[in-house]
Image 1: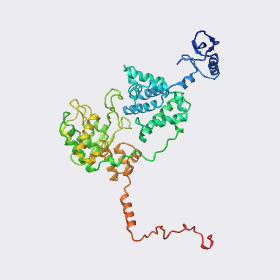
Image 2: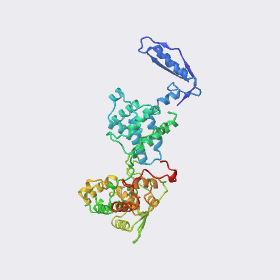
Image 3: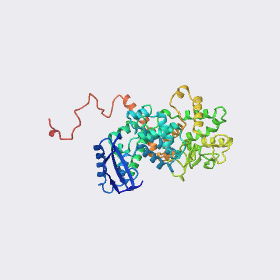
Image 4: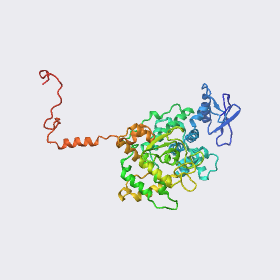
Length: 489
């Protein structure tokens, strides 16, 4: 941006025959500017604003627009700001982080568009707007690529109808945006976890707006959200299989008949077993190599996890691959996690390697003759078939183990019920103690049986030795400890 402090104004002139005959002219640097008005009063009013701005000490003027730089900042649109944020955050970020940022910015941006009659009349479809934002505007790598006409129209509308970032400095407007962020596309409420993510990204965007001097301060800390009376971070026991159900599901995977896709059931039996017996994430199991496995003939084995390759989609990776090959979640690229595994899992892995040779790069699990990484859709289809084959009709219709990830939850709950130290469980699962407790807190307390026995004894006792208060022995309240002769009658 070229700026200048050399400003000159000329006398307002009237040009006959024009729809707006009164022309205001001025110069910033070497660039001349003009603006026409319907009446002379309107032209003089705008000229007065410009002249007043020249008296602001240190105020630079934009040569291109002919206005003070601060005016342009106030007019900066949310759409342009969000696009700039996505570009800044892209480099070096994990693919899932990029995807999460884009999806949140889509929701925020659609809450920051004009709702006037004209804007509604020309507004593209919801699907077009979301696709244009997610797949094009918030992906720096998509810039310069040929856009379908539908996408170009949607992006032009967004650019023309996006509200200024400065609107968010107003409490009422910021609250309305937060209210919109708390709703799904169908109008239902999103989860507390999703809302926390969206609010966090809005906070980062506002911090970036302060950095760019679009607003003075980040107003979000001053807006308190209504506390929810529940914690939806916690895993519901309704989805977690028992040991018997987990083993039944694994047997269901192994027994699936061969299809056109090959022996996927038998091949993925060990894949799902790693989640159930060792608590691995799907991306960690996908990335596991033979060299990372210590599998003795007897006794416990050991896995040395060095990375993960989650299935995130081609839009968000640097090389356009479906999987993002990276380090362990929330860890540096050099970090490793050592996970002891029980003899049962050791035997499963040894049998798997005896039947299925590893990929050329040592990966234990792969898809097809070209040794590609297993897509989420592939193992998801196997899991759905296994649920139908292994569960009863009642279990199948329930929420029980609807996702392969629920096998990891089963492993975590098993360790907690076995009273393994919380710090050790968190280390094996690869997350913090805080996350462990917030996710699985309802499995930590083992005093239920003792408490139930105490209550049952109290309910069945003939008399109570503790002097329980009831309608027969109630008093006006506890004594104060005063001498009887000093108490007030």
